[in-house]
Length: 83
Image (cartoon, rainbow, N blue to C red; front, side, top):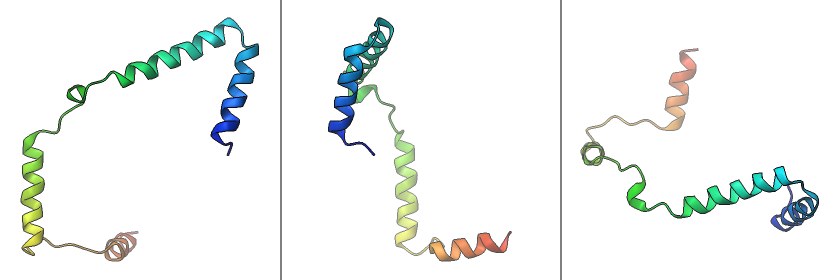
């Protein structure tokens, strides 16, 4: 895999000889990346509180030993039995 430095050099060399169409594509990519930095945390999808409540409920059951858990090896063995 190329290093970041090699990639930068390759892109710079390419841009020096690129036609207008390619330059516009690069410009659009830059614009899109800059817009992503303007997104406020409040714009992201929020996890509803009832999901956190359910997670906490299941966590409490686990801590009390009320939930049956399995190791990866047990899960794998059960799945292989079904094949």
